[in-house]
Image 1 (cartoon, helix red, strand yellow):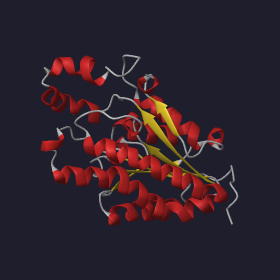
Image 2 (cartoon, one colour):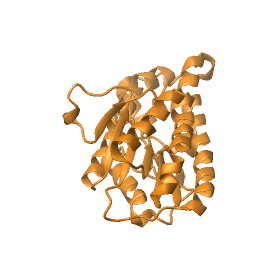
Image 3 (cartoon, helix red, strand yellow):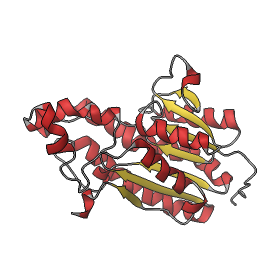
Image 4 (cartoon, one colour):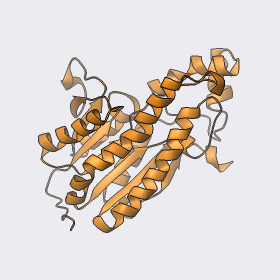
Length: 256
């Protein structure tokens, strides 16, 4: 049996990777929209009041870290209605040189963590009556690029998880979607430039135009606030009929 949503009750969310970039933007948007938000990252800022939401440190490459994040949200807010699985990092290298420990770590944060968050949060999302599970995936969940074996594999895999959760959630009032942005103006993308230059044999100043923006029809980066706006729509009443899908925000990348 599912719960009944009550518009008078303050809803609660977890956002992972909330310390910067997309996660910070999503956290700020949900707080502005009236949500209680547990802002999960690997560390918390020295001044917790400097960021929106309630900071919480967790290593999401571990089972214990994911379980602790869910438990902390429920203990702090008394409920859990929304999970936004956004945490991640990138490593760029040819397959022959790709470090095996980076493969393990990327799959742990991009694929296993969303699975664990869903597993631990599921009873609370069902009890919400309008549970939402949202994965910030990537255009690389839909297409591949060279030198990103672990990232592309994990992002493709998480779409299978999204579809499965959507089918399991349909009878109990939980929707699951993936947002698939192209390159977003975040520290994660900025940190790729040197690695991309080495992998492609290019000067760093040519990477943005010739590698990062090359597959996109619109030659600009996506802004974090744009992704946050899409997340807010999917989490809100307007997203009630949207489940089991990947939503590109890729500046025309996958239109080719």
